[in-house]
Image 1 (spheres, rainbow, N blue to C red):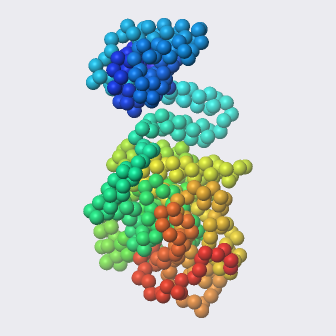
Image 2 (cartoon, rainbow, N blue to C red):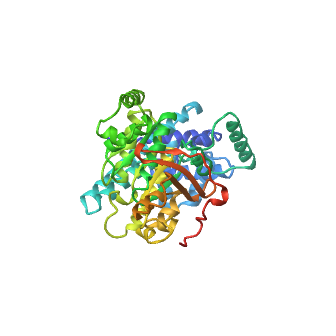
Length: 455
């Protein structure tokens, strides 16, 4: 049984605040009005807060006068009775006040958690959608432990200048202000940060899943924490084969069929040895839901290094819970929640998304934001949108033998809150399961204009 009633701690906190007028700021960072179980105690603490916010003393005399002035006779009598009880409780020493406030906060969290769980049980016993209940339950429980006072909201000019100086100092010391994705030209334009929702979009077979796996594999090797890739479509063995092919420089088919040369086997076993204990984690689950993603992340964080470095989700339109009516609204909930997960785990979220078929009917098949399926909410919530496009794929599909494959993939940045939009060219080596940096040999005026949706 959860012991939720701890009125003695509430009386001690209030008695101490009424005795020591300089202790309010220390306590207010830990508790709020709703952390008091007694409604009378809530009213008394509310009056103390009101007086403290005005810089006025909040002693027994001032608070008693406000009780008489603010509350009707019937309520006033009840509050005054509780107020008299507080007057009979010895004030704690200021150094013990924090412990009493933290005890109060703990009991408050237990009461609120029990209420949330009871509400979830009632919804489950009714006809509320299971996924909706579990998503709401986890969000509500996490919200309880969010300490809003740790998040600074008001910044003076001195605060801003100091923050700027601190960032400049970190850069001078070699710390990058953005996350290194493993592709220098992509880094320069994208500049992804922790908490960003990065949408990687493209038509099937463009290599969008491969690009995210390549990025997360790089992060797993060179950053702290676990990089988690949620695959609703690609099998774990296919991902592993591509990782081995990319690092060992062996064709995927040779690994799949175990038909490697002596040199290739040597490189393969080197990959096998080097990557043991690696921090890339694959979660393979069709129609995965947001609640399942959060549950996996919390478990991985708890069991592994205690930190999530990046999150990849492949892909949006086949996640669970999106079928039926109001698909656009449901996708909006998913994108907003995934963005919130990035803030919650302090890491970027790479969300893969399909494009509409309409792109195939245009002579110029380079995608734009309106080609995103259910584009409104995706475009609104994303911090960065990158489209993957390969001319080689369409030339091959059309049977055009006049154009020799060049292996060039265009990563078209169509939205970027952290930097500029434009196009980065990478080398697509599908046989090795990887994208690679491309030494550009094009003149700047040869880059097509992708700013228009016109063919």
